[in-house]
Length: 148
Ligand SMILES: [Zn+2]
Ligand SMILES: [Zn+2]
Image (cartoon, rainbow, N blue to C red; front, side):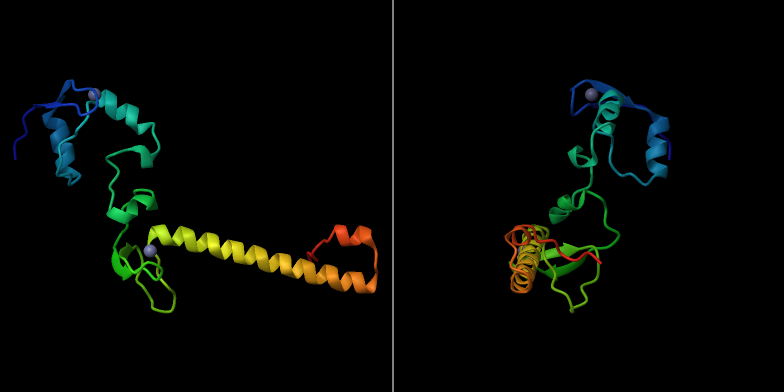
């Protein structure tokens, strides 16, 4: 297949740029189906941005929050929390609940809060037993969990 230079409009700055035959050949060898949408200058600009700020980072619906990376394979799953169908980059095993990216964050926050509460209860229990053994207000105010 022969390639010929083509003039394309830049989506960012509006100037036209040449999509050269050589570049087209390069794109073809990389299996890229789409023409570049930005001039080389704007492309260089965007390369310095973080991937999630780049529009051309592939987005797969809920997977925008996975950093825009292309998961190798997606598996449909039902979110344990909201019941919506979501896609996950691993095979659902059935022994663990699957969450959509929205609910995952909420669930994780809830788990962290629960763990924190459990730690505080443990600290309170230790403080209580320390009080009985040695009623010292200074120790009561400064509870240290055993670290070893
Ligand atoms: Zn441009
Ligand atoms: Zn959900």
